[in-house]
Image (cartoon, rainbow, N blue to C red; front, side, top):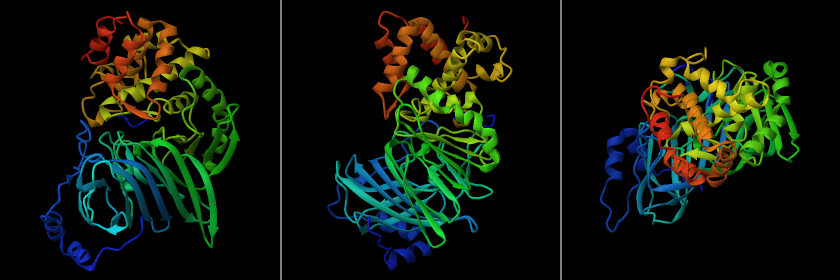
Length: 480
């Protein structure tokens, strides 16, 4: 992420008794959900994975392998109708499990084709299957829902979830906005494949992650089917609905490019779009093979989001991006999208790498060297970064949820990488960067995984002061 605001399978209806309980209030449902069932050995999966900054995000007891989302959106009435078919594997014996869903009305839930009781409390949709699920069992969940999706406000003040635009909508999810438009395990530690079908009024386009598999029109409605084969964290899923100028091309490495640009931004975007092939080629040279099966971008109007976001395959930009911003968001395809943080505490592994990619691009294209950029930050000479904010907390320990997108995570995170480069030397540093992207391709990683990897790849080098002073230390280090 960049440019954020300053601190930036069958459908079965519920039985009538359950429906009446929902109307009467949650107390009756809660009683039904906690009633003792003879012979049940499983336990509830648990709400939240106890993330340090978003403790209610995600859920315990299962791993999702695939989301099949069938959505229909009516922009005139701001109404979303959805069916989520979720395939998951139980990681423990389960008597119940939770999904994250904020707002919207749930019409029914089935597990393995049989109706399931459910309860709503805040962002938690608690589901009790007809029978318990055994550890290791793969199961399917279908949730039917509808309503007016919400725009959520992050702790840092930025907007996410379902954003209403002049001609449609823009759904963005970092850090916990995906629960505003589909139920799921909304934490970066649980990645899955996706199929997203979006039906919109004829004349509008619907863009999502991955590859466009089909477009079908029936009457006055058009359905777009998008498929993402590589694992994706829920916060990287997106949908953009509106009028777009669509450009398709293929890079020299045979990578398909799909770009959707709001007509108001078409002229301003033309030059930077032309740089995409060069940027991808440069990033592959430095970071290793591009990790996904397509690339591209969505350029919307500036007032719709207010920040750029590294949505998988296809970053979203609020207006025509500058070259540095495009470099940053495309670098995230390696660092953040393919190698995804295990928790929001590890955010610097996303933003530090993407910010350092900007420094390296400048270094290789006639701008200041990475060392000069580092020195200007250390001396407090970067007019875009408040020195007091830069040293407010260490990159690996953001002060709170409102600051996971603050300067220490971005710029000081990049400074950590530059210190590693100084210590290891250029050859070893690029071996580390490329090896890290390859070793954790399409997986999750922690800060401890990274420091251990660096030490393994550069034996004989002592990184302890870098970890102590630059990565975890409070305040400004005494020596640059």
